[in-house]
Image 1 (cartoon, each protein chain N blue to C red):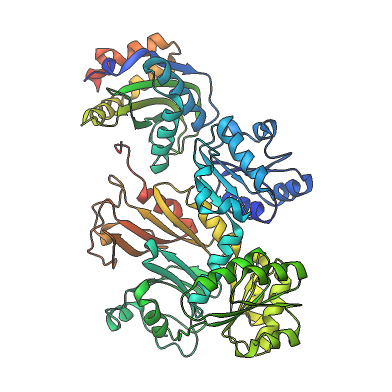
Image 2: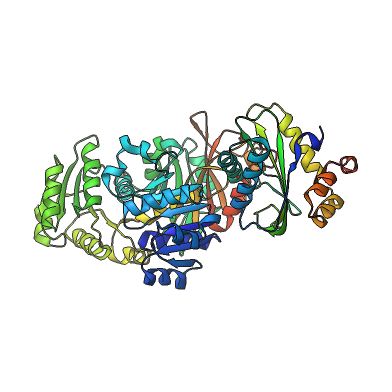
Length: 154
Length: 458
């Protein structure tokens, strides 16, 4: 599996700042709706619901919010870079500026776990994260995320 | 979590105090600027003066970023509209409203609060909660505090240890051996005003207040072991015939067995309304503090007396008077937590605090993990959390002795496939189990961490 198979170039966004986790999820919901036609309020609710079971901030400023949603036929991702980090109640209490949301169909076997492992492996790479943080152009970010070097480095 | 609380009266203030005390971002809204100022002066909260259901007021209160709204103004209708605005305009996910009118609370109309109608996730009704608390107190009169857990299969009992308690000065470890079939665990002890979770070598002393988590079939035996005799409460005198009194009297009439209740109500109209709607309860019109009237109600022969008017001081004095007239067990409704320490000196046996139940039902929605119930103990000193163990959480698949519980935390019971298990060290916790955990407030975040799913929970 490669990141390019779950992430569309239009699903990479850069925001100056969002004021809360809820707003971040609303932005993600809007992007998911625009790129994949998923119902935005349902997406927000599912992400919040999953978040209430345990925060998805994995540390080092990275969050991987995810949820299952009806009406999807494959795992899809939304990447958001925040210029101003957001308090996310992550495990290391560090605020978050990189969020990679994953939305999976309700019945998806192990695909969703593979996708989660791939994204988490990719974003665990400090050099890649540093490059992502230095770039505020969505098309460059997409190229960085999907370039073979980043996958190999992982 | 960002929470907006509408209404800075008793209920709102109490909730704001509790939630801001645990570092939630709280904003209080009330149309009375004095009440808002009282909240912002005494608590770590922000305040907005304005009408709670107006979208512009909610916007100023930060509704766009809020995760939860609690509508607890005096008006049911304002609370309902506030929740609707919070949902439709600001997409606030969790909405809690206080509703008092009986008609709104009737179960057959509860469909109204569905998400696509008038979206309210949790309805809190102080009257109903007080009535439920009163009934619980009457069912275990020897305990100063009680709460039901595990689908009614377990009960938390607050028991004060007196001289006649057979198990004083015995290490708790030994109690387990002595009463090997007794399914009860001491989860908390308050000694010299300090609450702590006991170790197996700790002993109980006279004057301790202890919290025991017991399987419901073993409640009477547990009380016996701790030196409390369980007596049936058949003859009850209720002082106060308002909404709360009426709900309690109705619940009493619905209870099985021969309950004989008498009610005293000062307001003539209320007394008449109560007399009309109650079948077997005798309603007397007059002052609950009046000796002659209390004796007419048969206070000296009564098993228990409940003082549940809307005034704390009246309740306390009426309870003291009833005690002086020979009633063995008196319970007072006390809204103001600062009055509770006066119970001991005044000889009041038990109290009901409606805020405690209200706060508990809200906390359930704040904690991480799949939390089914939270009961707040004392003045937010500790909590009993009942939650489902999720797969991938740090607890799942571990033997209890290997779980990294902090010092102030004890497991009360485990519910698996509808059956209650004793939490012995080698019992392995599985995903899907329901656990009841006693945790000192400082250790609650760690308990939350143990209940949280890990990142790969999809």
